[in-house]
Length: 510
Image 1 (tube, rainbow, N blue to C red):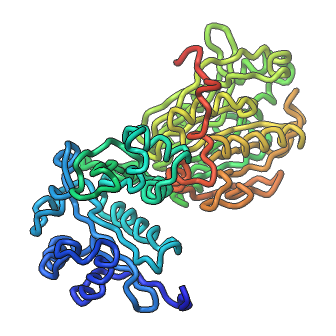
Image 2 (image 1 turned 60 degrees about the vertical axis):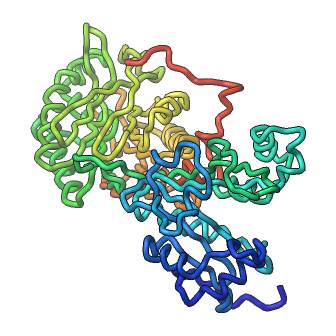
Image 3 (image 1 turned 180 degrees about the horizontal axis):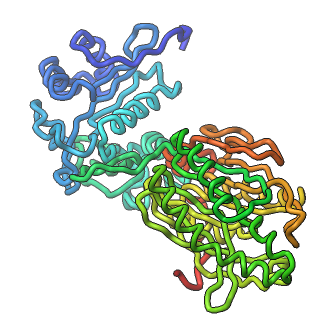
């Protein structure tokens, strides 16, 4: 093209565009009387669905256009032809109560091809589909190079070869590159389409934001505010004093309208100070006696302050066996339990801690979440299983005494966010407990990690605290960004798994 492009505009179709549009149609389809839309037909189309008819103008000159209507999926999912959709000039197939956007035509003037202008028209359709809450976009796509191979390949075989880049088809390749998927073959679709042998491919793009109409209003949030407590280990005279500090943090996070409050692993360890005269296994079993009361108090606070509380973790004795457990206290009053699956060598040797077996996702009013206690985040299989069950946010309460131990938790948590395309929130304790055996010092820097792609921070860190300082951390995360990442990310870790080479399965599901 000789002229320099100074301006590209996307505008709604107007009857004043008729003459310019007619020239484009004649250039592409010939000058037969049925090769272009008549002015009366355009008028009908604009009247029926003005938002669906757009033109692209380059330096004020019409360069392309896109026409579409809304249809009922059930009526077009069966065999149909192009004439069934567009042959009736009153466009009776259009219905404002439909759930699919049907693409009638997209054309680009020859001199403007190769500039990716067609992508703008496809993107507009996708945005319109999302705006109108339609299920997706469908159309019958031509396969103009099929005539070259029709004697040796069926349409299905031809499509497969195009998908694997063995055959070049300019139309089908373009549609596939714009995230449309082939659904079925339509025969006798467009009369006179010799190049395609009158075949077309039913192409479909799915609106990942589509919400099916329901009588019940949806209460699930997509923008979620996470609240993390970086807890200072200090002496407490009794449980009531510790719970007073817990409520202080819950009230603070609730005041900022946080959806979650995450406490660290063994945040209640200061209560062991009065049992320092006992052996370490005996002392932690005494600490376990407070767990039920802490759970009950956090359940009350979750309701009172309208916030989902992740209790961190606490020791619990069941059938005379000691476990490291925690509770998700939801703001609707329900409570769910989680366990530490992998205990550290120190936990097993010093306290006699038993390994847990419960691994599950939790349904909340902010989507599905997972919770792994400290060491568990260093085992990628656990979080991958949760991700495959739909987890969007992984919470990790932890306790580390050295920077080395903290680095293991941090680096693994960041890896889990990238490989599972989810958010990961970690919260730990700081300070020291000189009067508690095996809990002398703590090191922590709580944080919220994200995947690493264009919608997220380049370093994968949404927010983090000052190291070794008591404070709260509040960060907003958007679940819709994850949905977009799953489908359109630079890389797609979950979708690109090679299940033909390897699989990951549970031994059991509790």
